[in-house]
Amino acid sequence: MNSPKILDKEQFDQVFSSLRAQGKSVVFTNGCFDILHPGHIAYLAEAKSLGSILVVGINSDDSVKRLKGESRPINNFYFRSQMLAGLESVNYVLEFTEDTPLNLIKKVIPSVLVKGGDYNITNIVGADFTKCNGGTVQTITFLKGFSSSSIISKIQGLT
Image (tube, rainbow, N blue to C red):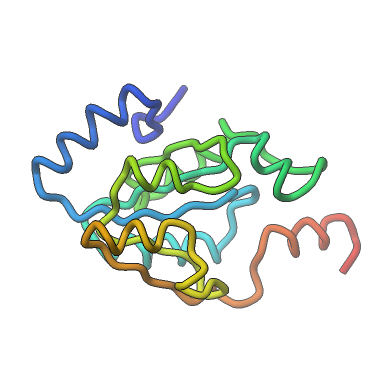
């Protein structure tokens, strides 16, 4: 069963026109979220604290494969999106099929664009667009010791 937090394009238009009319502060972040771990949960909770609504863009399965390799994703979009939708901090989940979320960011028009601390603000996709539309761009420090890649390596006995 799909969560009502996971929006398709038609639902997106309805929900976001309502949010804009209400003047809600929308925080946007994105990623593959292939294997959900404590680092993701802490990151998303902190992102949510920056505004009223947290929207998470998730790479499609084909996009993850292009970015991470043929063996990824471990969990398909359905499972990745359901896990994120199950988190209290996440209000909405949206899929994007491109390698970057720029087109999605242009639709969401976030008040705050957030990425992990391993990004330099000047290199964050959509930063210029967000700032030109009155929003801010922030980075959040990662919880050390957690990454999907390191978990996969550990499972495979590589570390």
